[in-house]
Length: 149
Image (cartoon, rainbow, N blue to C red; front, side):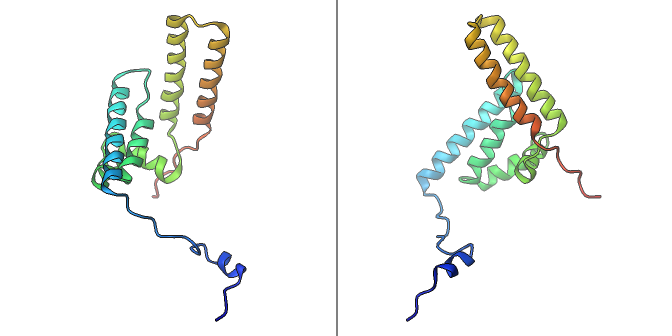
């Protein structure tokens, strides 16, 4: 019997891959609990001006994708949050409005931090640089593609 050559293994992208195992009951429960925690944080973020919402809901969708297809579908079809979640999942895109709110929220959060905490200049600079890096990354994400006509 002849062994396949090393090149033959590389030719097929599926060569050597095992099918993804379904998570067990305990793993699904843990993913679901984490998903609900992310939903709770997203709701809090919707009510508080300096806490983000969408990132927690993106994480919730990812958790529910591993535990509850029904909850994943509910978030992806939600009348208010579904469109941004689908845009992120399908295109890695953030709307101009979303970018504006995110960067504005970071600026407001930094102003409240500086006003309330009176940090040392080194801590203030470190937090400012971290937030500026996050804001730059958010601003660099593509805008959603226009829906087909």
